[in-house]
Image (cartoon, rainbow, N blue to C red; front, side):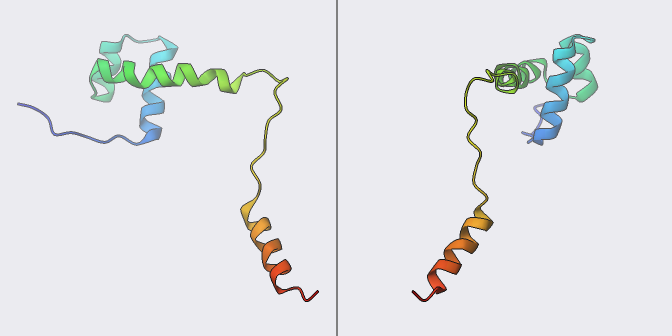
Length: 84
């Protein structure tokens, strides 16, 4: 009997992928523990490993901070209501 398709939360996927990366248990053991297919664990593990480079990326690159939209919108509102 086939199981209906399930959608897992990002937090759950991360938890399972981190457990797989630790390597304390086999994929089969993790699959049984978390009630998911071993292939699914491998699919969640791969992007986590690939994106880990962003955490430890080169410090020579200038990091661009995202602007605070609330502050910018407030400033626009002030300027629009300002009487020149």
